[in-house]
Image (cartoon, rainbow, N blue to C red; front, top):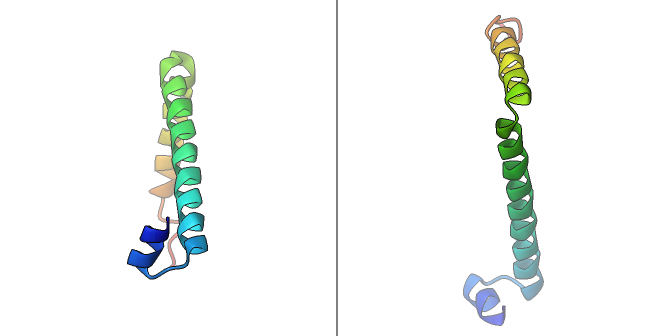
Length: 68
């Protein structure tokens, strides 16, 4: 860690903080990917997801959210 801090010009604490944040984000994304895979593996739940996306696609396309 000392070498990383020296190369980056940052404190060891900053390097450690960044490493922990990267790890946290990685864990979050892995968990999200597992949950998404489980959703896709459940045909009924996946169809419900697709139906909800369709609703949102129409809602977002109605142009009501844009300022004119």
